[in-house]
Length: 183
Image 1 (cartoon, rainbow, N blue to C red):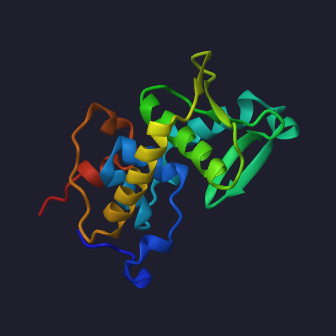
Image 2 (cartoon, rainbow, N blue to C red):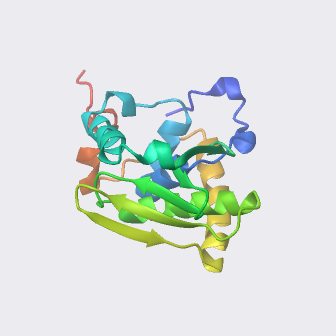
């Protein structure tokens, strides 16, 4: 499959890597490539809509207490500037590793912009669970390597292969990846 964003001249080095890129990198390289190349199917997914609904309705007081932060292309929905805490709300912990790395990346971006001592909290309201997220020196090195790999993947003209994982059936790209047209 050829890249659809030929108009960009395949120069993604100027593209800011976001928390979404990090999340998708941890879940599925194909999803990362498709999303980064303009094939964005999340807006048609009932599961994505359900997650947004949980995000918007679970903590109605949040927008009054915390700020939305847009920094280096990353959109952090809830940032407690006073206590230096990134809050990330997720529907399910099925891809918790991806959620954790997304928050670590937000902390990394804040540090890169001179904000030290930040920590994160992953919140799963439907599970009534919270997990603290911290960034280590080893994580910083890995993030730097992952950023390079993300650029390599999205610059590629070839879409990564389907991963055939049990999480695929819950993905907004499922039909794109698995439904084949009969000839």
